[in-house]
Structure formats: C-alpha cells, structure tokens
Amino acid sequence: MKQERNLPAVLVPDATNRAALTTIRSLGSRGCPVTAGAPARASLGVASRYAREFFLHPPPAIDPAGFTEAIAGKLRQTGIGVVMPAADVPASALLQHRELLPAGTRLVLPPEAALERAHDKIGLMDLAASIGVPVPRGFTARGDFRSDPKAGELSYPLVLKPRVSRYYTEQGWRNASVRIAADAEQVEDYLKNCPEYEALDYLVQEKVPGEGRGVFLLARNGELQAVFAHRRIREKPPSGGVSTLCESAEPEPELLEYSRKLMSALNWSGVAMVEFKWDPETRRAWLMEINGRFWGSMQLAVASGVDFPWLLYCQEVLGEAGPADTGASRRRLLWILGDLDHFLLRLRRGDKPGALFRDLIGTRQGTSIDFDTFRMTDPYPFVLELFLMVRDTARSIVARLRR
Image (cartoon, rainbow, N blue to C red; front, top):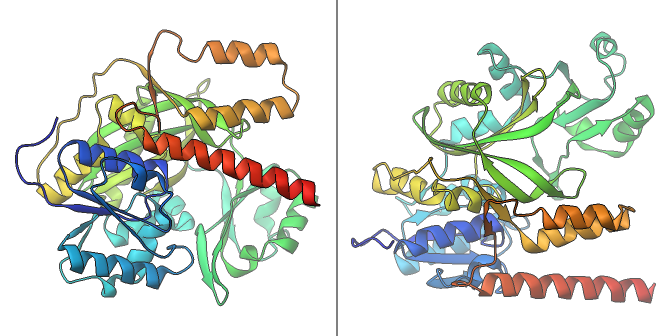
C-alpha cells in the first residue's frame, strides 16, 4: 500500500543481487522514490519497475574509490540524502571512502564500530563466549599452527576461518575463505596454497554437528524490533549454499535468546543475520557468524509480513517504528532459476530421477508459495535473470568447444 506523504528518496547502489531487488521493490511499492545504481545496465534492481531512475557506477569490489565518487556525484546531482546498500561490498567501499560523500549523507548501516566487531570473527567468538553464547572449541593461529599444543586437543575435521572475509593487498582486495580440513594432509595443502593464512590471524575450530539456522532481525540500540526465521529445504549447491527453496519458521527460543544477547552486547542498530549451527536432537547451538546486511532470501520475510527494508527505512530514515506482522501463515519461497541449478547439479552427480521428481512435486506441500525474482507485476528482473543464465550457459558451452 502506498504512503500518502512525501517520503525521502533513497539510492540503492550495486543493485545486482536479489537482496537489492527485494529492497527496491519493498520501498518503491510503498511510494518511496528509489534510484538504483549498478556497474551494468543488465542488473536485477535496475530492471525493476520500482526503480524510478538508474545510473551506472564502477564495480565497488574493483574500484571502491571510483564507486564512491560516482555515488557522491549522483547524490549531489539529485539531492538524494539516503543511501541503503544491500550487500557487504558496496557497504565496505562507502565506509572506506566516506569522506567523498556529501556532508549529511545518511548511510543506512549499523554503527561502524559494531560492524567492525561483528566482522572480526576472532573478536566475535571472544565476545560471544564472554556473554554465554556457545561457540565451537578452537584457538587463534597465524601461519602453521600444527606445532601449537592446542592443536592436539581438537579432533578432525577442522574449520579454518580467517579473521575477516576480505583483506586488502598491493594487488587489491582478496577474499579470505572459510575452509574445512578433513585431515592433516588437507591442512598442509591449505597452508601451502592459501596466502590468507600467512597474512591474517585465523580461527582453528572443531567442526560441530547439526544444521545451519539463521535468525534474521532488526534491532535498535541493542533491542530487537522485528525477528524472522526460515528453514532451508533446497540449496545451491545441494551440499550447502544459498537457499533455492525455503520455508518460514518460528525461531528456536535458544537461538532467539542468544541473538538478543549479541545485539545487546554490540548495541546494534539495523538489520542482521545471526547464523548458528543447531543440533535438533540435543538442542545445542554454536554461533557461526553475524552478517550486518540484507540476505538473498529476504523476499520470504517480506511476503510473510516482516518487511525488513521498509522497517529499516522507517526506523533509520523516518525515525519511527514500522508495522511487522509476525503472525502470517506458513509460506515458502522458490527461487526458480536457482532451483533449476539445484536439480541440474544433482542430476550431474548421479541422483536418481525418481528422487528428483518426488522432491519437485513436493515443492508446495500445502503452503502458500511465493517466487523470488519472478513477479507478474514486475516481470523484467526475472526476464533479465533468465536471459543472463542462457547467455552465460551458451558462452560456457562455446568456450568448452574451442578448447
């Protein structure tokens, strides 16, 4: 439902992903003027009818300063005073070069100090342990940890988790990935071939049992304002990754309480995704990480009545509480093209067609189902997504034939 009042305009940069698309649709459908920025015209958020205007900017991962300068130029040109990044990379670039933005620009992000504490995986584990939030057994290392006496206290498989997800070198930004080592031989391979373990401190942790669970929330000054949870049914890749089919669910009380403690300790304001490993048999949980940003399957929360982009806008821009309907019926969200990838990957690994067919026909199972990018009232993002998938597949086939 559109609002009658004039709402402050918002710029959503790097509108290339599903979280940005959901943000643009959420705000635009309520009458908020949204400008979408992207490195290329063929971007999901740019294709949405709810983006009143679009412009091109450099990729934030490659040229963070140029990206921020382009954002600053657009803000000066249009008079827009609010920027709402939907992903880590544009948020990091804007914070890194904040001095380039016009005075008074509002970056809709959690407080920078809280973000830094949450993104520091070592510091976060120390904080969690100090307030009674369980974490996996482990220790901090740099370089080769195998001679450390603490290593002998842990059992394989081990998780090697760099302090930060991205770090800067003379050659530019590098990703620092989390890796699982099944044995000492794999540890040796990682230490030899992955430079982040020499460049950064990292956690060595025991791999804990259970399934991934997330608590999605909005907080204000450390107090929870809205909460949502879902369970993953299918993922891409099938072994674990982004959800392609997920279902709304009540958050486990233990996970909700742990999330409340963490937000209070961080004095958090904004959205967050608090990720845990959860063992349903023992009801034990372990903190994995906190992401202070929107998430890919956020459309499920919006469809279920917890409209996080709008709630965040109301809180941080309008200075008021927005409505959150947490009593919505059970719903599922299907990412059509992501789910197609899921089934193709399972076919390639040899799963039986009968099992795939049973999973496919069980997609709905009596629940209301919503689609992620596909929407009859806003069709072009899905059309673009389909085109890009076909184009990339064709290019891959041609490249293989030329070898």
